[in-house]
Length: 180
View 1 (cartoon, helix red, strand yellow):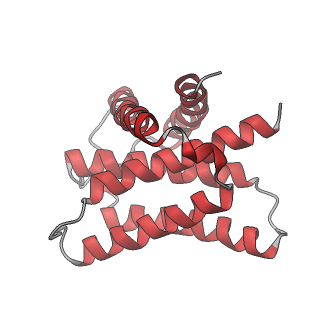
View 2 (cartoon, rainbow, N blue to C red):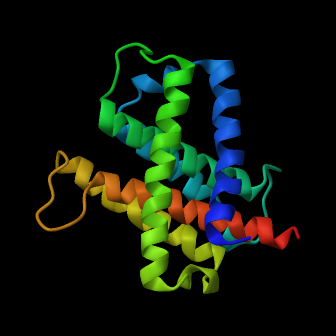
View 3 (cartoon, rainbow, N blue to C red):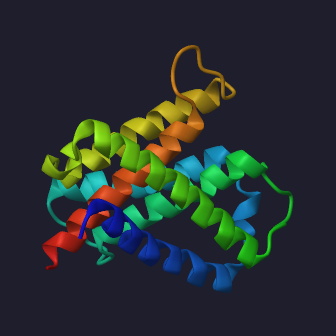
């Protein structure tokens, strides 16, 4: 499989979980402010880092699930950035699913452009590096949020969330390749 096809396979799995949770919970996430979504992503990334550093885990949830969570929460954040926060769930599940797929496609297009320029350097990286890069992006996002979304010369929130989606995809592709 090439990277674009692997991206699609990972997204199918992540979107499938997003849709199942949507059937259980609806679009209640629409009321979350960006800092709350950022904190949810941070919790997932911190668990990954903690387990990577300790080499063991006491809760039997697979690490792959944490990367799926980072990816899905990042896409929710991208939707919130575009649409704003709602006081009540204001999207049908079909609208949320379509918005998810649109943001995932933006991430894929960015990944393809960067892969062209970087020559798929990510394939030689470690999964733990993706964890660290996600945490770094989260710290940047938190600072931008604390600055009320303003940056002087740096990329903004959207670029950081898109990168977190793609780092998660890369890690999930690596998990997928290990299972072969």
